[in-house]
Image 1 (cartoon, rainbow, N blue to C red):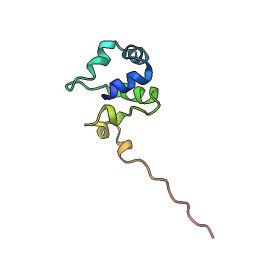
Image 2: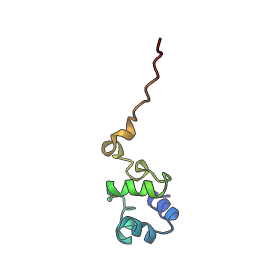
Image 3: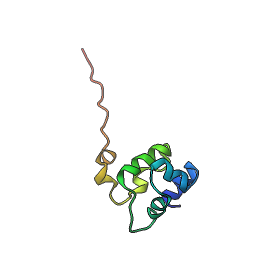
Length: 84
């Protein structure tokens, strides 16, 4: 299943997804074409609106790491140090 279809199913429909994003249903439909990409700003909104069920990685598999490098190299938690 295409990530846009999955997002539309979660939100309710392509029309509902378009309304949430403030774009036309046609724009949402076009994002499924191989030659089109979901704009980065909408990827973040889709991830948020689907509560992480559809991620930025899902929506932009070829370049997500260039747009959001923090997802590729998340900060590691520092280990607590012992005090004397």
